Amino acid sequence: MLDLTPTEERLGTSSKQRFTHYFMLVMALIYMGLGIFLWTEAASVLTISTGKRQLLGAVFVIYGIIRFVRTYQQHFKKRDTDAR
Image (cartoon, rainbow, N blue to C red; front, side):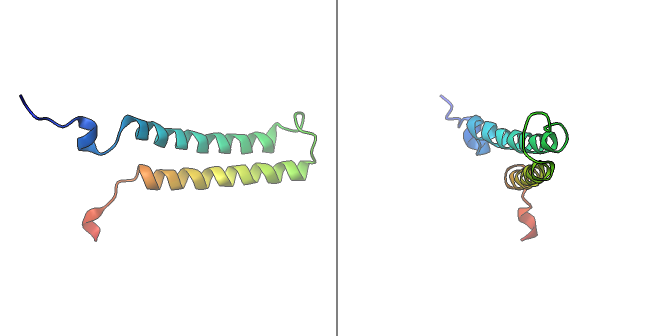
């Protein structure tokens, strides 16, 4: 019999890890979408003042962008090991 290692072991990532990485990207997009919603459409839904609503929307958008960039750099960007 051939002693072959599973593909997941050879690649170093499991399907659960990949699912988690994509889930983190989707959550970042959801945070940005929620922030844009608060900026534009939430006046009829929330009873807080316009300034506070827009500030909260800005916080969500900024947090979503930061989370997206960090997740992308940490999990999806090719690491250049030859540069060191």
